[in-house]
Length: 343
Image 1 (spheres, rainbow, N blue to C red):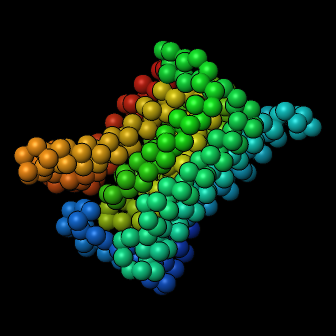
Image 2 (cartoon, rainbow, N blue to C red):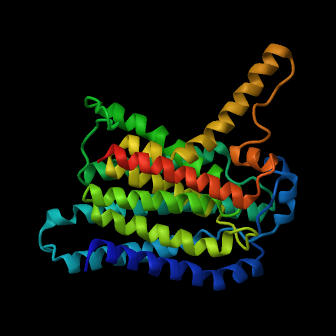
Image 3 (cartoon, rainbow, N blue to C red):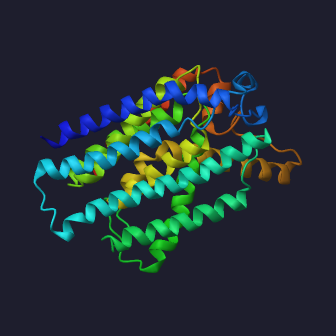
């Protein structure tokens, strides 16, 4: 059974599990009143009609991804005849599990945040400091895990240039990279179907890269998550019947970052994640431009109508469907450029 057939079966099974689980999860979330509080100052005023839409729907693709990625890995090993008595052959499994556990722990941080929001019936969950502390601990643990399980390189791979070994400074640099990217993915979850669609594209791009780099076992995760995102989108396309919540978006953020770091192709990670990077960057630019103009003129000015930047497009008249298509196509373009960097 070929690499691509196994991966397509993994994606299909994950799609089915995620899609079918929504039949049970969405009514359950309605029943226990786990609805998303909407703060209109964080988005267009017409988003107020989404008040109470069930959140934590990210469990759909989290469950499907974990189950099918692990099952797919063992199917791949059995079908390709890898010597299961060779301890060294388990290195890809440990790397795969590192990404799964890393993503799940970030999903847990998101779940705590979601739960506090629902319990308090307010859009404030964990404080910024609490989130950063939890994320810092998990990030350090993940970096230790991938070092322990075979990736001892501390060079930055930018495609056209590979840096000298950075030693401990590599890990010091990667911690803020992880925290920035995972939170950037979280910020992208502001329009129905957007985060799930962009991540679906990212995982397909990563699967192609896994094939090129002979990281076939890791592709079990990328295709499982691609299928899971697609199954979730059945419930999340506009008008959304369910939101992924921070539970889902934090899981996705860690998944994208984790796969990129295990592949150890930093320019690839940047290009595949560029849509998320721009989303988070728009928030920072808006904030500091406002502060700068207020300091200089006494009146703060804004570059964008609203941030993250998908809200700017929304305020400019783009429909949610058009935003999803535009951002996903942008992800494809930059993802293809990422593939070119590793050829």
